[in-house]
Amino acid sequence: MTGLMTPNPILSTPIEQPASLRVYTDGACSGNPGPGGWAAVIVEKDLIRWEIGGSQAHTTNNRMEILAAIEALKILRDWPISSVQILTDSKYLLGGAESWMKNWKQKGWKTAQGSSVLNRDLWETLDGLIHFFGGRLSWKYIPGHAGLFGNTRADEIAVAFSKGEPIQILSSPRPV
Image 1 (tube, rainbow, N blue to C red):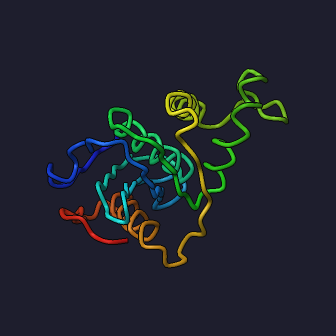
Image 2 (cartoon, rainbow, N blue to C red):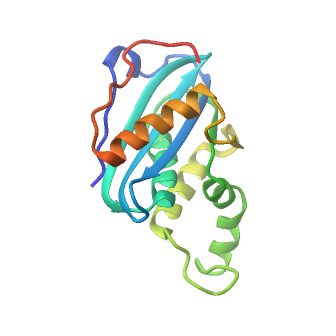
Image 3 (tube, one colour):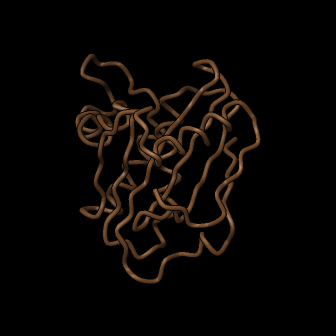
């Protein structure tokens, strides 16, 4: 089961004007498979607008990476977004979102080797969100654990959720 934590409602109020957002996502597992956590940090104009995170009792790191992007995009569906960029340290998420999914769908959700695509349920959900955002959505790979505040913060939240540890979700805008 996925948990969801949101900050102070003042920050999570949808923005009123079309905005360009960056979303740092991360997933973590305590054991792989094992208890997992996911997180997303939504940033507008170098201020954190919203932090979210959740957990699953038995999962994999890859599932948590995909779920972080899905949950962030679900929230942003109702916001007036001019553009949204997902920043991830997961080459698996990036590769699937930007190229592999197209081939998987053409092959009936089979890999190039003919085996069933792992995490198909999540990839199909993500595919629908990618189509919803269309040209307003872009992806960028960022190195993990390289000191980027948004990535570091998403990692902290995801790891805390994977370990069942309490974590304070930021309740006021903070420069990134």
